[in-house]
Image (cartoon, rainbow, N blue to C red; front, side, top):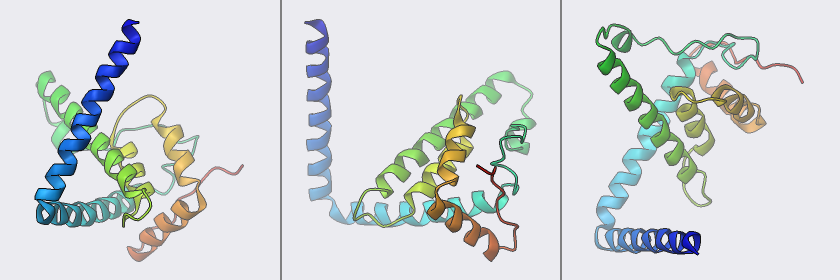
Length: 162
């Protein structure tokens, strides 16, 4: 019984949020339009930068997993600052995954799967490499990522043969 009450409470909170967002969008449609445009442009720019910066063998299974070298994080000598920057990095990765999921919805312009891939690459969690390999192995994503890399004179990604 307690489980049903908890689920019912969660559902009511979700409905309240949906109604709040509906009213917010209806009353502030110009803000929503500007926010959508800015997030669309930033997701494209962020994906392009990330895809061009990755080494071509990043998605190989035999490739050792090394975090992206960031001189700002590496120079932190205080452990709490390193911990806080790791949390911030994971929050940004989560935000990119959520934005990518929203951009993947039908009727919404954008490159959702590439944004999800960028969020996965930035964040740190168990199994992220396997999930990123699965996404890049989708033919459309692989071709799109390599088109971006070719525009910036970068070699194409190399994937494991299956």
